[in-house]
Length: 183
Image (cartoon, one colour):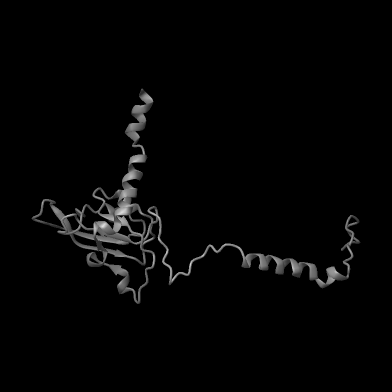
């Protein structure tokens, strides 16, 4: 190979370099330094991670403040905006102050991609992304969650609801941007 390329000059390795001993010692030194470095991991099953408010975990239905059911008015926006079509909803009339509520509300967790579009489009803040991340199923039937599995009290997702309120206040509406340009 060096006969074809006159610029190539083979380098001769000395005895220690041929043994690769300096490189092995460098690797051992790095490993030894890492033993005393700060630990960034947690002992997961024993110590649970507390996700921040921006974390998008399992989607849940929020219960009304008076605990008479879910906040959902069965508008169907969440099922229309869901990219993998994981949400199915069927509405029915009700005698309560809200005219409709979901007769059935199911989320197929095997299809859900945790994008949060359902949460963004919901006018009633009835569906929010919780902080639950440890989700396992024994079979496919358990992965389809109905209203009874999805319904949670407001207190359990209050941190996320506060974050959403703050986030929506920070995001400018298009009509506000236009009015600011005219001034």
